[in-house]
Length: 83
Length: 196
Image (cartoon, rainbow over all chains, first blue to last red):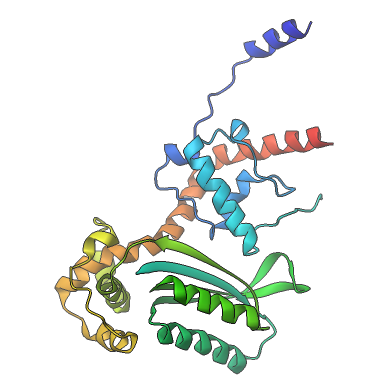
């Protein structure tokens, strides 16, 4: 059953996710720009894994560092509120 | 010499003159420790993402400067002692810069806006440096900066200033991709449900 379920799921076309920072080289990852980092954290404040956002490994590393720096200086929350 | 960037959050309830004193204190300290202040950016009162010392707001200041590690440790030691500074963070921006390159940058920043726009971004700041790392004292630097109004120097130094403009660029680019911006958010909702 599980096998079948997986199969049906695969039939749906899923758009290939591309790294946003690779697609647009003018985008820069900067910890000071909290607004740009927002899409990459959950409302709880967790960093979203790259399998979901589609960010490439290189940029995810930079992103993670930037988010952590932004947390340190209170641009982003460590723990977000559940609204 | 290295290029650092320090952001510190000052107490938002300070009086105007008390705040000015505080800023001057750190500016002087920087000069004392043989640092070169490139940019002193006062962002004003901003909302904090989480309360610090039971305060929801903070007065952000961003300093960019050239210096050595000793300067950073000294600066941070003072931040820790100071009650008026709620939080601080130092980030290393560049590992190897020469004093002369930084001076040129300051001179470029002092120029009127028109000159900056006229010179397109081409070279990186590291390439600008001329091999004359004369042991210039910070006081001299300040005097020399406005004096260097020769067009040649301006052209060389202007690309460095465009780095700071990169922040604005990212914001503009963000607005261009509303479709892609949606995807992580919707996924977020799914992730949140899974958590429950």
